[in-house]
Amino acid sequence: MHMKEDHMKNGQLKPGYNVNIATVSEYIVGNYISADRTDTKTFIPFLKKLCSTYPVQRVVVDSGYESEENYSYVDDSERLSLFVKPADHEQKKKRKYKRDIVRRENMAYDAEKDEYTCAQGKKLQAAAGKKRRSETGYAQEVTVYECTDCNGCPVKAQCIRQKKTDKKSPEDRFKRLNVSKYYIQQRKAMEKKISTAEGILLRVNRSIQAEGVFAAIKEDLNFRRFLTRGNANITVEWYLVSMAYNILKLYHKIQTDRLGIHLFVPGAA
Picture (cartoon, rainbow, N blue to C red):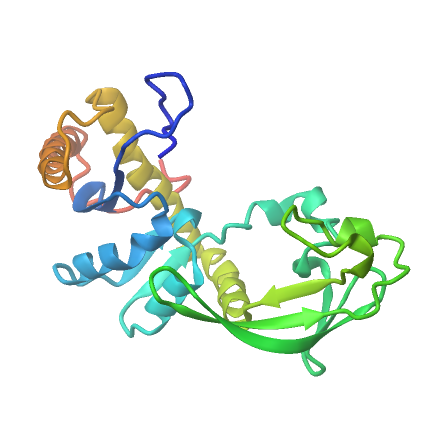
């Protein structure tokens, strides 16, 4: 993995572990250690582990955990409610993003005709459907939209970005979009959900509590590198650190008279 703290200072990939934690009321209640670099693949196994021990209802995670597979998993559950900031949530606020004619989000969509209209008024119509299968086996249904009238377009070079692996010349290429309608639907619904009073409160607390754990462990406990190797040894080491953190957190809550307080309320004295 690429490490945030490069002790060798050479920028190379180094062996490491992806440590995931679950917090409730500022305490660590669950750990999941993986050798996978992406958080999207650790979400489901970690959640299954938590649900086997606790009556989990609301799951609040950062944008690194967002994926269609994770949306689908929570959507199939009757008891779970997911709060996750879409990966493009902050980008969509920028002027550069809104003016990018390449993006599907900036094209007009006609639901009745099931077609997109680009910046030059050209139509992108549904041409085919296909399935993509992820490394974990999840099958994603994708609709392919194509425009057959790109010749002579004044912004073609800007709109259709050439990849090094493309064998066709720019003149022979046309605009194509691969769209997962389910993923778009889930993202739109999530944008509304995280903008509610409940969503804002939970997201603020995720930043304070989950990120605060790593900050305290790294800075206050000065724990920045594992001293052992191997998943079994790492797990034991991290559980010891987690217990030490929880004891310190309990002591701090007693001293500050904060026992029984589960969430930080923004703006509260």
